[in-house]
Image (cartoon, rainbow, N blue to C red; front, top):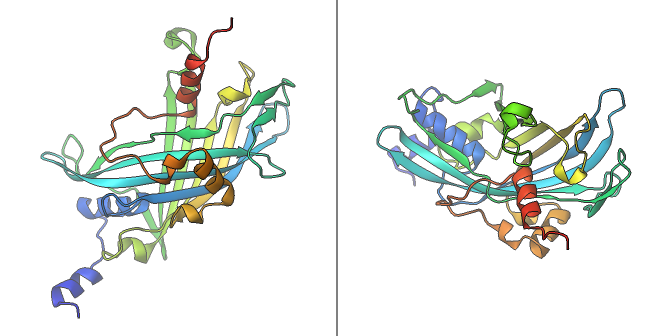
Length: 283
C-alpha cells in the first residue's frame, strides 16, 4: 500500500513553468529520467531532390535509428541538468524494393556511385541545465493542446564545410542546411511524475545539399528528407532491415556510447572526409 507521501508524489503533475520540472519534461521526450537507460528512436521516410526547372525526384527511402542514454549533471551555478549521448544509423533504400543500396545510379551524371549509409558515432548534444550561464531559468519550448504536447525545433546550419578547404569565408562553399524536429507526446504521460519516459513520436525534415557520395560537384539543387518515427522498446522492435545491418555490420549500435563520451560528433560530411583521408593514393 502506498504511503500518503508516495500517493501525493505519484499524483503530482509537472509544472512546466518551473525550470526543474520543465527540464524533466524535456528529458522524458529525449529519453528517460533514469540515468543510463538506453532509449531508441526509429524513423522511416523518403528523400527527394529539388532542382529548379525540373520535377522533384524520389531518390531514396530511408530507415533510421538513434540509440541514446541520458545522465544527470550537477553544476554549482546552473543547477541540475542532464547529458545526452547517442549514435545513429540511417540506411538509403531503393525506393521501389526497399532494399539497402550498395550502388546508386546518378540520374544527372549517368554514373554509378557507391552508397555511403549514415553511421554517425557519436551524435551527442550539449548539456541542458535548469539555468543558463547568465542564470536565466530554463523554459521548455512546449505547446499543449488538448491531450497532446508538442515540441518543435528548427536547427539552421551554416558553417565551414569539412570537404571544402580552409578559406570558405573568402570563396564560399560553406555547409548550409536545416534540420526540423517536431515531437509529439501524450500530455498525461509527460506530466505524470511516476513515468520515466514520454514515449514520444517525432517528425523529421532535413533540407540539405547533395550528399558527398552522390558526386554532384557544384550542380545546383538540394535534398529534402521527410520522415516520421517514435520511441521503440528495443532493437527487436526495429524493422528487419535495420536489425540485420546492426547484427551483421554494426553490433556496437545495440548500445549507446558511455555517458562520459568526449569524442567529437560525426556527421555524414565528416565521415566522408575521414574516409577520403584514409584512402590510399593511386599508384
